[in-house]
Amino acid sequence: MLRVILFDLGDVLTLADTQRTPEVFTLRFGISRLLSECYFDRPDYMALARGQVDWDSYCQRLREEWGVGISNDEICEAHAAHVYALDTGVTDLIRDILTKPVPPEVGGATNTVHPQWTRNITLGVEDHLSRVWRSDTQGALKGDEGVFARIVTDWIPCEFRIVVAPEEVLIVDDSQANCAAAREAGLVAFQYTPCKPWPLEEFLRGCGVL
Ligand SMILES: [Mg+2]
Image (tube, rainbow, N blue to C red; front, side, top):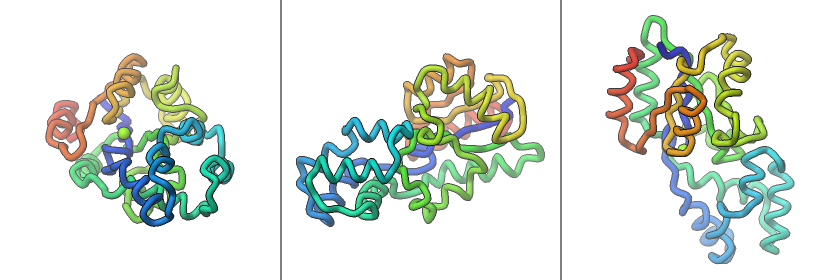
């Protein structure tokens, strides 16, 4: 029986298009396309996602590397632009899960796709999740060695105040690598296809949580 379900944010709970960020950098803030199109491939971006550099240092390094005078808020605006909508197919499923008499705990687990996560509060993601595991606060990405095991042994007991076995935890993620890493650690994983909630719904019914 599932006792905890953790939903990925990027391309599961939210819809994302990484092409939108370079467009904002270029069309709104005048950054050359050559630079802005490499934004998500910069090594600093992964360091930010692992919490190895904070947002202020990250923005400063970007300004130095690009040689431009762009503010932290403008970088944030361009960065956050790639997450543009909720996948209401998924949020509807979460609402249904939570109407069960004894629902599992529902949270999120995300490799921080938008470091200024609160900027996206208007999307309403936080209304659907009681807790979110974030790579930048945990110092590791979901697919990193041992992370899913630690989510089960450390993070869930700390955040939800329950002790669970790996097989009682479901990860819903669009990344094949993350799903494979979760299964490797003994968790249940469902690989989600954006905008296609029906197979997930069927899976959740099969698990008895819908
Ligand atoms: Mg994702």
